[in-house]
Image (tube, rainbow, N blue to C red; front, side, top):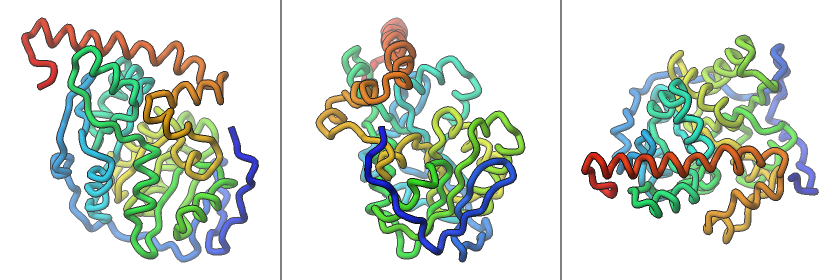
Length: 300
């Protein structure tokens, strides 16, 4: 659902660059790639509290703590990425070994589902704190941007880039909106990976939807040459720019954001919320029963 307020014009310091692969890039006129000269901070170096849930090691910290850890990560360190799985993602990860490996190799894995949090507690499992991709993105942009710092964005329609820049008073980002289906086009996929490598930033927002953004993040990390932290945040930038409406705060806090999105976009969300996501209930119960049979303490 799109708000009626139209975004403004792109700042003059952003230069649109058409891609031969069909995407649209917006590159700051004064952007100059920097060298990869920092050591990679291992996941354990994030000083994180972990909770194992559905085969993944989730970081269980508050929003402010997670943002601080990411802000402390050296800008020049080799690229690492953060994943924010919700119920739909967890079901997919359970059935896709390749995607499971990508999630397990993330620098941080954050639970983006108050529904999973509530259901996990209901069946007697230990559950991590909830830090959603949208909340984390907003917090980083509001609290942890340095003077004159530039971010890199993959995804988000160019029409909504000015609204995001204006709302958070951002330095014009390096922005690339890859063409539809880029994940199935090797040349377009490679071009997207190369854009991140050639436009280094401390924070790289990967907002092209799951599982595309996770496969992209893994490719950027494994091919080398890129720096910074990639954040797989789905529709977060669309929410923050006003391209889509986010659920009211009371619905989000009550675990009803899924209902708001289902009502707002029934065709798009019907299968996700009413067919795919409920499978997570069986997965949680299965983990609880397995812990009971093995004599493990589910809350350990």
